[in-house]
Structures are given as C-alpha cells and as structure tokens.
Length: 216
Image (cartoon, rainbow, N blue to C red; front, side, top):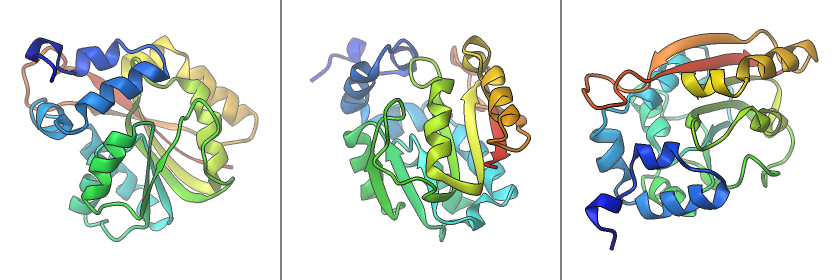
C-alpha cells in the first residue's frame, strides 16, 4: 500500500509525461479518486461541462461519448441535470477507472482506448462528444482532436473542456483555427468555466475553456 506522502494527487497528475505514467497513476488512484479528488478538491468542472452540454442541446444527439470519463463524474453531472436517460458511453485510458465508472451503472458501455492512437471505435459513431479533465497538463494535447473528430458523425456537437493554461501552452487556439479553416468544424465557441469552487487549496483559481462546436 502507498504511504500517504506517495498518494496520487492533482500535482502528480499534472506532472505526468506519457501514457505509461497516466495508466500507473490512475491504476493506483481509481478506488479513492472520488473521495480524495472530486469531493475533497471541490471539483465542479464535470458539472460545468455537463450543464453547458445540456444547454447547447448535446444530450439530444445520441449516442454520446464521454471522453476521458474517469470514474464517471460527467455522467453523474448529466444525471443531476435531468439528462440521465441519454445513451452515454464512457471512454478512458485506465481500465481501473472504467471499472469504477461501470459499477455506478451510468454508462451504456465503457471503452478502453488511447486518444493518442486509434480508438477501437468506428468512424462517425457518435452524435455528440463531451469531455472534462482530459485535455490538461500531463494528459492530452491538441493532437488528439483529429481522433475525437473521427468518431463523431457529421453535425455532432462537441463540448470539450480544456485547462486554460494548457490551452495557451500547447496551441489549442491554432489547432481549432486549422480545423475550422479546413472545413472540418463549424465556428468554435470558447466558454470560460471554473474547475474548482469554494475551495482554498493551491489549485482553487484554475480555469478551463470549454470548446463548443459542431463537426462539419
């Protein structure tokens, strides 16, 4: 068992570098993630992304893919927003996190896959895609947008939360401009939202940009 000083936390998550590190961290964190992070840190990011997704009509565009679903926080937020009947699938790199999510009965199915490779999902499979917490430090950059778009069908709504500092550091603005210029997406609306609320920890002021757009 890990000593307390070695327990996974948000600082360890932000410092990750590579797929193996991500899988190892969430393997060790899966069973305590909800208590140690979602609740303890005041993590409202999934709620904010879920609310925006529902407001923009994404819950009506079934089936829906939750990218980087983790333990199911976005699915819980959708259920709380009275969108619990949506046909929702969860995608994540970590089989341990997927097991926790599956136990909650919130997803139609769960899919293990790496956004930096080719997902085990057919082209144009989903009517909508949302994500909170995956496009962030130590995780996934804009190179994954092509694969996310591949599995979305034409006209699909995408609602992708991106850590604001990560957005600036890794050129997401340029990536979205390229996709729009190539005619692969409609106009991208960037909506600012909090990641945490009502907390005084070191990450309390972290913000995200939620990219809301439709696949062309």
